[in-house]
Image (tube, rainbow, N blue to C red; front, side):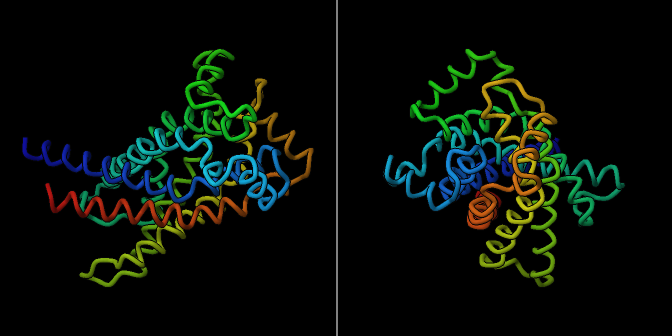
Length: 283
């Protein structure tokens, strides 16, 4: 019974710490994400033009347009992601016949990261769909108006449009994400000493960069599929993008994405580690 209670408390801590890290990520990185999506969907041709026009039309708060869906969605999404990562580590340890406390190899960490993306997609896909539509919508509709509009287009199927593309992005992305962070933590930490806040921040930032470098093309496919008003498969979207500009066409907005990924994910892991440490001491 004590073991069950301990496992439950550990799961709650992972969930809460991940949620706090998600809030840190959204508040830090949303303006960069807005620019990325508007470039990916062809609203603007350059990041500078996008920022200038967004500020001119909506002021500084315009850079946080569409922030409510990710703030509402990313918080539980990150909570589920970090909880899923802990569950993934337990599954990998069990299948590898290791103790839960034994360190995993980087390959095993990658597998645990991939597993974390499976439950996360159920939350991420609909909120990503709403966020993308809001970010390119010229009528400035609110979150609930956008959800209603999307639902009227095709019910829940329309709300969850792009789910497969989201999983195709987040599966390998999460594998890269957690593996990079754990690798850098091990490289920079000294035996018996806690990693410094600066090192946690740097490791988190580089984890975000490695993730986006690895999955950016599928993110472009996902954004275009979710922003489309007509039904299109991943293959159809891929062909259309390639026909427009070859391989280069899969990387519009990569600059803002990478610029966002470092500070946002540095904030994420810093938030997660600090809040988890607080919970470990408080509970």
